Length: 83
Image (cartoon, helix red, strand yellow):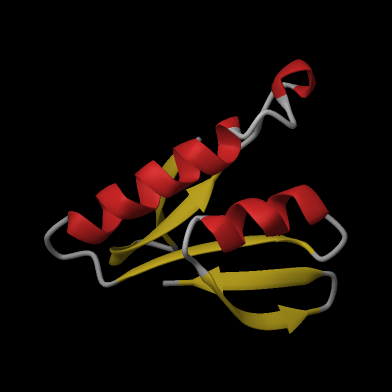
């Protein structure tokens, strides 16, 4: 789990993550996403945190909801999120 600058924009961070299957379903992704989003919001010069997931990835949808991101767009097979 971590951030990267979005398309070279130095004021936007994109959240990404992957959890090993044996550790899925225990809340680890939610806890880490909440901590990273909170940390990202405190960083000077960061105006937006974004993420995306497939619209059928129900676990990721729950993680991003609980992390405090808001759904901003549904396009093709993706849901896009932002602070």
